[in-house]
Image (cartoon, rainbow, N blue to C red):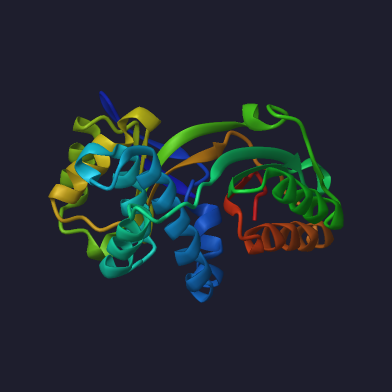
Length: 254
């Protein structure tokens, strides 16, 4: 895969692994499970409102979750209703955000972000899923060193209303680390602290996103044979099926 990468001071051509790779590979599955995704996004909106209030202008976390929800085609009415419900005086739902780390088949590294109102239940559910798929939960920090936390913004080329050069300069001028042009989409990478600034600069130009969120990006990837790949896919599917699981990151080369 050839990537055009814009960096401060010039452009370089390099061979690389797209951070959109794993997401794009599962897009069909994501589309078919949209109802479940909306439920999980609703919980993320609830947590953001509880932490910083219902006004996005004064709550950067809420702004970022709204952008993530829109990138997943969550309707504006659904987003607004979730925010309104979360800010209601009678809403007593409280969730704790926890990150778990573990291993899949052949030592594939996994990071699982959850939001839960019962840590014991969630930990037991995760352990069961890992054990069933030939993996195991690890201790905090056991695999996180294999990932970097980055903001990732993905834009469909056919829906970008700016030229490639204009888009690249806009992203870099607002603090983006990398700009990658692939066959069907552009991918912008930022430091977590610059993610909101870059995203908002693009939004002001009317840019729509296929993806816009801060995530954990692997620094290396592991290839699996067919049998191990089937076990790994089953592990991911079973984790995604848990209501408390918000995000699953891994370094499997799908």
